[in-house]
Each structure stands twice: as C-alpha cells, then as structure tokens.
Image (cartoon, rainbow, N blue to C red; front, side):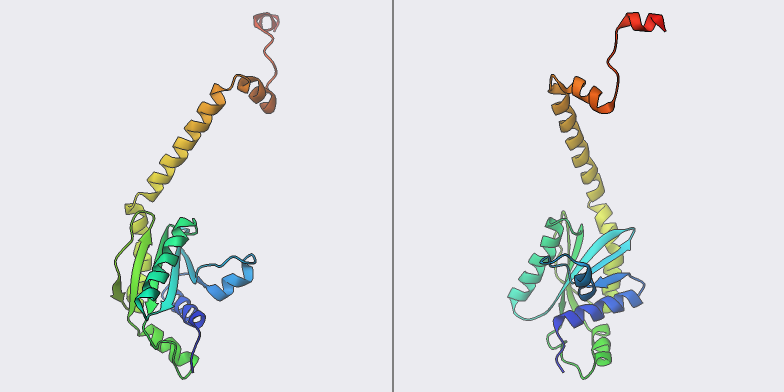
Length: 195
C-alpha cells in the first residue's frame, strides 16, 4: 500500500504528540484555514506559545531537499514561525502494509533534518524520531540564542520613535491629538486663578 505524503505528516505529528509535544497536522489545519492559503505540514506550539513549523517531504533527488528547504525558509519570511524544520523522510517510507505498520516505520526511521531560524540556516543532519523531538524542544533555546526577541523589541522601539518624530513634527498634531483625546483647550492662567 502506498500512503500519501500528508499521511506521513499526520503520523509524524501523532508521534511527536506521543512524546509530549503538542502538534497539529496539516489535514486538521486545512479544516480551519481560509480558502487558498496553504498552511505548514505540521505546526507545533509547545514552546511557551512559540510556533514551530515542520515541513516534511519524501527524500529523493537533490531538488526535493532544496524545495523543502525553500518552503521551510518561506514560513519564516511569511511570519508564520520564527523557527522552521525541513524534514526528509527516507525513500520508500510511504510504502507499508497498513497504517500501524507505517506508524512503526516512521517511529523507527532515520530522517534528514535542517533547522531554519530568522538569523540562520542550519545544516542537514540525520536523526531519529526521538532526536527530532529533542530538536523541537531545543528550538526555543535556538530562538533565544538568536536574539530574535531582542531584535523584535529593537525594531518595535525604532518604529515607535519614527512615528513619534513624525507626529511631533506636524504643526497641527498637538491640536488634533488634544481633540482626539478629549482634552479641553487650555483657557490660560486666568482660568486657573478663578478655581
């Protein structure tokens, strides 16, 4: 029996979930997705609410490794996740006598994995299912070591400063802000003396 790649991704998600990692396979995500938007194969949100994406493909020609790498990298560029893993299943993995046999095969397989972050493209490495679970758990540490949070705060701070300077340079800004905020117009020093 030949299983589709999507089934491999669902099995991978189930096996990660069995190892204590919350995951949501692509087929479930499609049900809640907006039309026309393709979502990642597996999204994991186990690490303090930080989503991690896994894109899985069946290994083959070098073009497959390049394709899944590009897809994983694009998930970061699209802002879907700060960490993305490209996973290559061994050739022939989709061939199994039954779904339980497929689960056993995926559980005991050796994968090729590459980790991408906002600041680094990792190298291809081989790992087992347990190793993949450890890579996912270590992804949060990678995120912190990449100073992604520090960079995001710096970008936000720069944007706030730029917006503040733009507002402050407009001649009509004080009056408009006063009106928008509902602050009454200052009547001058005489009004203060009467109170």
